Structure formats: structure tokens, C-alpha cells
Image (cartoon, rainbow, N blue to C red; front, side, top):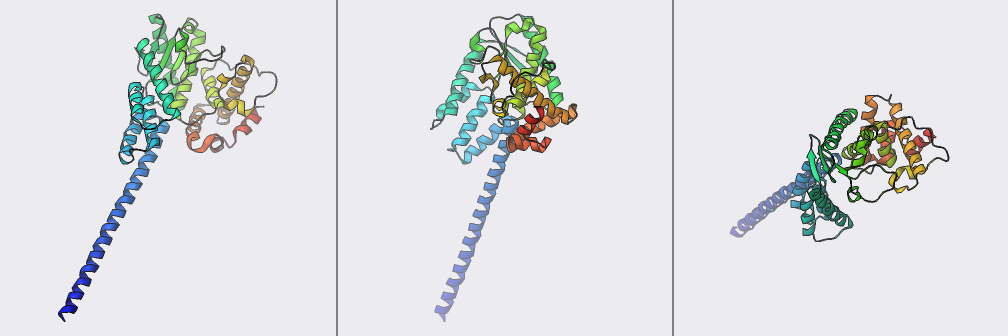
Length: 336
């Protein structure tokens, strides 16, 4: 009888132990599932922060994610890019040097960071509410302040047009020496946006020229802030021309129509001035066609901004179909 009681007790203890282990295991599993959901939610939030250019949010999230996945090379590359986008170039270089892997994108960030760090040390600086203006060659105080004043007016106009306010301060380089023009480019290019607005200082002598140029390049800056997707060139250059308004009366170029492929790739790759003018004209007309379909007023520009923001998830044709019911090829055919 004593033996039976002992066996019964062992069975009870064994069952209790099994239930305890099952309970602990379930709790552990539930905790892991919950952590995984939190991790995935944070990744989604991080992607949103990256998409809209909220670098502080993105940095905080990526640092938190790296605590769980310290060797995730994708997260590490995002962190380097985030430091670069905030113009924390020395931090970007130092961070990349701590990583245990090589990648061409990281090499680019280091090279560009060193160049921009050197540029910031060499150039003079003036600041306004939304801009940091760097300059070389000692332009007159009048030119510098005029550029900042025009940019602030343009900033207010474009932010109202798109109903969008960029998260970060913007940079303009008013350059005299070619080493600050942002690399080699065709002679027909007056100014460029490569993360900074780069404008030759001699343009400031011609008010009727530099004002639309500043509006044009600032529009590119807004487009970049609104979406970190790969924006087709016709959309980017088209909306910039519509906003600067300096080519509204240009006649249709003669000759054959450009291909959709040539309108999608960077126009600065085209060395021929006449061909470049044709690409710009068709880009402007394609964007005008989209705006006219929405009536051409304030709502039309805001819908275009939403289309730009949807490029990240839907791609070019997906975003165009959602907002305008047509593909890029349909649009080009309608303009032809």
C-alpha cells in the first residue's frame, strides 16, 4: 500500500512538473511572439520614418533594433545613411569604420562625407529659418542675403502648394569655383540638386534668371523630402519646371518624340542641348497633363504630392493608376 501511495505521489508530482514546464514554455513562447510583433512593428515604423525623412525617429528606431540584431548589416547600412542625411559627416565616417563588412554604398557615403566635411570647412556660412547657405569666392553680402530671402519666399510657396513641410533644414551652395558644383555635368546645366542646392554665384547678377532657378532646385529638394523612392526624372523635372514657370511658353520641340526610357533616366546624362530641351519639354507637359486632370488648382498639386509619396510602395505605374487611372506610357501617348 505504501508503495502504491509513493507511486501515486510521483505521478502527481510529475504531472504538476509537466504542467509547470508547459506553462513556463507557453509564457516563454508568448513572450517571444510578442517581442517579434514589437520588432516587426518597429521595422514598419522605421520604414515610415525613412520614407518621410524623419531622421530623428529613424535613428532612434534603428538604434533600438540594433540592440536585438547588433550584426544586421542592413540596419548598420541604414544607420550610416541616417547619419549622412543629418549632415553628421564625421559621425558617419567613424561609424562606417567600426563595421566589419564592406559595401560599395558605404564606400560612397565615406567618400561623399569626407568631401562635404572638407567643403563645410572651406566655405563661408549664412543661415536663415529654413536654410544653411554655404559660399566660396567672397560673394557680396547683398547676393547672399538676396538668395536666402528668395529661398524663404519659395519655401513658403512650395510648402503651401504641396501642403508639406520638410523635417530638416536645407542647404544651398553658392559657388564660384567648379570644385563646389557637385561633380562634372553638361555645359547646359545651370544649377543642380544633389542633396544640396548648388547655384553658380554669377547667376545672382540676373534676377530674371536666378529666381526661377532657385524655385526649380528647391522643388527638387521638396520632392526628395516627400519621398525617398526612385522618382522618374520626368516627374521630378516636370514638376520643378511647372513650379519655376520660366518655360511655360516654350514651343513644342520639332522632331521625333523621346522614349519613356529616356524620360525616366537622369537628364544630365544627355550631352546634347537640343535633346535635353526636348526631354524637359515633354516632362513638363506630362506633369501639366496630370495637374490639368485634377483642375490645375491647389488640390491638383496636393494630389500630385500624394502620388509622389505612394511611389515608395506602389511604384510609378501603381501610383499613377491609383491617382490618375493611367500608366506612364498612357500619359506619354496622351501628350504626343
